[in-house]
Image 1 (cartoon, rainbow, N blue to C red):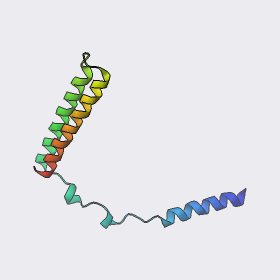
Image 2 (image 1 turned 90 degrees about the horizontal axis):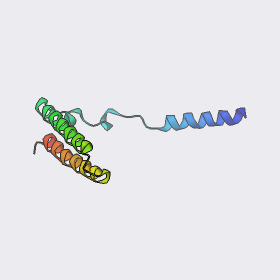
Image 3 (image 1 turned 180 degrees about the horizontal axis):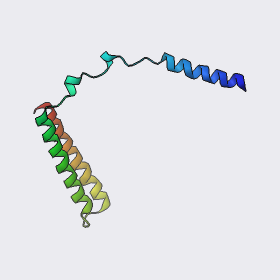
Image 4 (image 1 turned 120 degrees about the horizontal axis):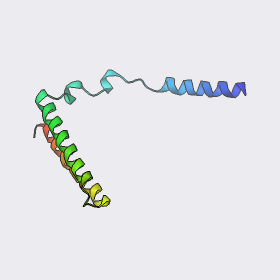
Length: 90
């Protein structure tokens, strides 16, 4: 039993040691993901609008649950495109 535990421990340690460490050049460049204060403000406002629209759909008792999911999915897709446009400057 002890030898089995030892073998498992050695296998686990060897797997960890063989895993390549994250190098600085593997990480995404900070400048490519950094947003300007103006972009951050626009995106924050878009997130706020999106939450309001989604909450309005959730609160609408006239809409069926299946339809609510579809509407929320459409809202999220719309805002995802808007946010991407702000990020890329288009």
